[in-house]
Length: 308
Image: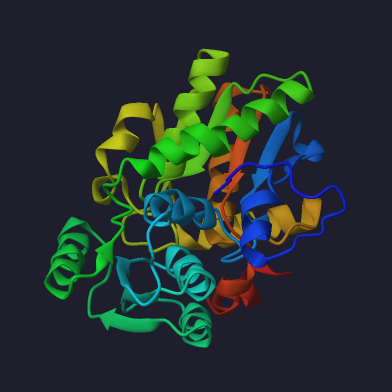
């Protein structure tokens, strides 16, 4: 399976599996109203419309040489990994059981059910180590595959080899060198892999991790203490963002660039505004993991106040 092909010249693909393997790279776009600020638009991934399409493909690739048809995959997810796995289950013929928290957005649950996933909603506030280890034990008892995105080294390595390589080529094509990387803290896979690749290629890159403020839940990102050791190895600074400020970030991006980004992307943008006050006008790379559409019900709670 290819994960970083040049795609079809005319954007014509002979199967869905061909499409999801070969349409890359996703766009790198300059947010020109804010200076030398570049956003990697990962909501162009085709299945979950998020960066988690990449993650799931990295974690599944070692199983694709064997027959997955009819087998179960169990995985804990806050949303986008679950959607990507549910879609890939229909492409490759396996069965998927999604273990989610009680805060799963309603839109995400509907999407999972449309795709045919089994949804197990657990009465927990967040996915942490205790949660994902429990899911691993459930998979072992049932003879199911557990990808364990939270501890599987194929997660950061895939982003190093593929996502990071894409970004390096894109920056070299415009003659730029990123000095600051700002990305959300989730499993730690994409921020870790991209940070390591950028540092190997460009030297000193300052890495900012974005997490929800204490007492705030932002789908797609987690507090550092709930993440993995990978993140701690690469991050220079952590910025806390509230859910309300993440919505402010969504609105700012929409009204300055016309891009409809999601909550974790809004949080990344808010972190950028704060960090720029200290670091000044250097070349920034912001990772926008997904788009707005799964989170409209959450955003609507703030719109009377903020959407003026």
